[in-house]
Length: 121
Image 1: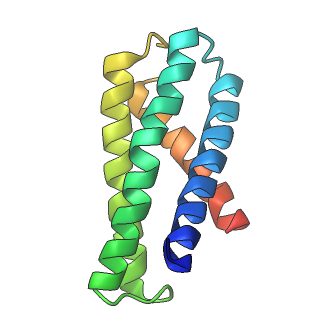
Image 2 (image 1 turned 120 degrees about the horizontal axis):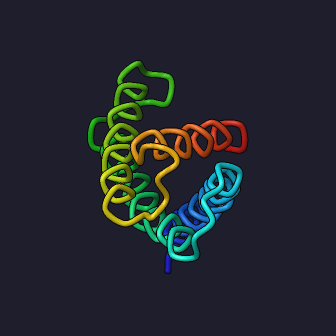
Image 3 (image 1 turned 180 degrees about the horizontal axis):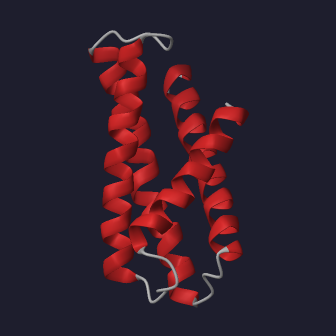
């Protein structure tokens, strides 16, 4: 396997692991406690996190977007909005947790992981 592929896989794995840790911690703070709800938070992130990261990498290359370009911020906002919506819909369908609206829960978890991701990366 080429070193570029290995670097990409390490990046994707790191991003996913950190996202799961951050979002689980925040979910627990918000009193998400049911066993299956916790499992669903992890599984939903396993679906959306690698997908959004690969989509971002491919679209940024395809559109030749640099990290400081305004188009980059628009792309990130668009992709994060899609993640928020998909996760909100999945949480609404799957979670027993009803203390917070599933879309608000998705927003809170994603703001936490995205914000801390900016600090870390």
